[in-house]
Image (cartoon, rainbow, N blue to C red; front, side, top):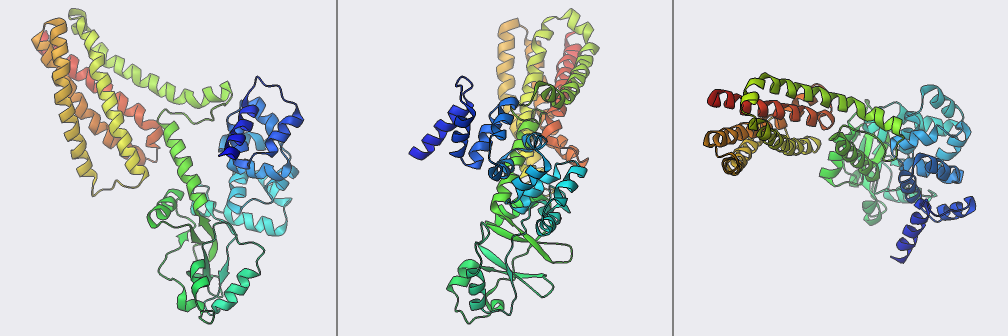
Length: 447
């Protein structure tokens, strides 16, 4: 606890703009922090201070820090260092970490950086570069240990002892044939407890399926979570073992996905301290979309301008209906987005979920409509108006469920991210339906 508190104090000193530290003092503080703690300090700093801190790092830790940074900040810092420095920085990184950094470079620069690497490192990294970033191939490490099925456990033990270090998160080794095609896996615990004269094929597991290099990274995360595994073999189209994925890689996928969904609900994707111009550019599109939907809602209101002119207090009450629908739709949308992200929603349970959400909306609608109707009656002493706003509220809450359930499904079908665009669409639906139902009923019964 004392060590952790001390490190937090170092971070506070680095991030406190009121403390004037010399470059040597800053370097000294940085040397006392881990790469992940330095990455946190960089992500918590404005751009100018961030670049200064990174420039004071030793080259041998730059790579580890870059690997721990978000994509946007990582690209920004990499753009300010030379190719030779970048080659040196990523030299000791795991394959997937190096691939993540290089994939974001312009193609010409990426090829230049690769050409400056050793033949062994280049070939190792090119395996990962052959696959898109959001696939198992983009996540894999090539630091994999494999053995033949006809080796004895004693041979395997001697082979492991001759290694300088085992790769991180090595809980198993993989069994391949002469063509390096995956056959099965052998747990480290099994190797330790087995009799040395047993043959690998007698104790290995063959019922555990490897991960295909082309599988989506979200599918990989689900496989790890459901099977509670630490590492898994990755094979290419021919069944050849090309690497492995470990749990730390999967945690990064889960964290990035959660981060994207969180920001996507507001239609933004930027780092906390992005420059004003970049932040404005990333937000303006969805603000424009929201402006367009606001005009659609306004046009709906304009249709009923005559009734609004005659009964002015309708203008006072109509935001209540639209607002309640928008909140209810966002609640349903959040439930559906979570279910889609966790792969819990499918064609077999979608009808049940829709019925459940409809039941919830009707129950809430009845309770809230009574409350809103009572307040309206006490406010304006108009029984008909109280009944109209109550019915309009129930209608809009039901429409909010339909929008909250089906909008993300439709968006996903058209390969659009429902986390980013879903909230804009469902809010528009509930605004329009809210205004139509309330003002339409008022036109019929009050004019």
